Length: 192
Image 1: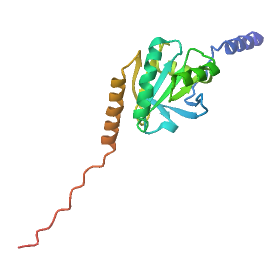
Image 2 (image 1 turned 120 degrees about the horizontal axis):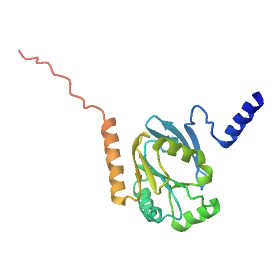
Image 3 (image 1 turned 90 degrees about the vertical axis):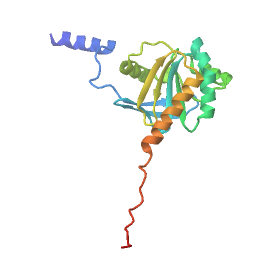
Image 4 (image 1 turned 180 degrees about the vertical axis):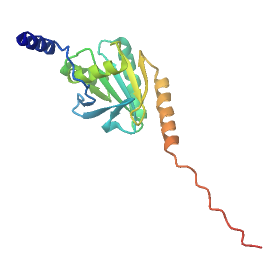
């Protein structure tokens, strides 16, 4: 009986049916140009350590996805215009080989962080589990400057809409961090 139970447990483990009690919530992503991004899962978001203080657009996309291809120029422009306020992280999920992905990025003039699918499998699974994402692309997650989840969107968004999100989130962050106005000390009336 013990042999049968051991065999069953080993079979289940090898098939991936037994999961750890707790999903990992820390990830290291390597961009195709060699940058390292450290990601920490938060209760209601994701914190990209190297991008803290910026609005983060996290997009899951593919090189053979027409709406994904249409969004590339928007992200290039936004990355130029808002480089101090936003950061783009694009995870390619159609398993384009890394060398072909690098050539694609160069040909398109992509100026933002791109991660190959092969190096992000655990992270993609984590996002799927946390958000219920079913694999439709492009899939965009927007995070505020503190890593808080703002929204998730399947499909293409206009550059104007995305710019509005960046501006609005930074206004909110600025007003949240603004100091309360100081009032001058009350002068005593010395004349009697």
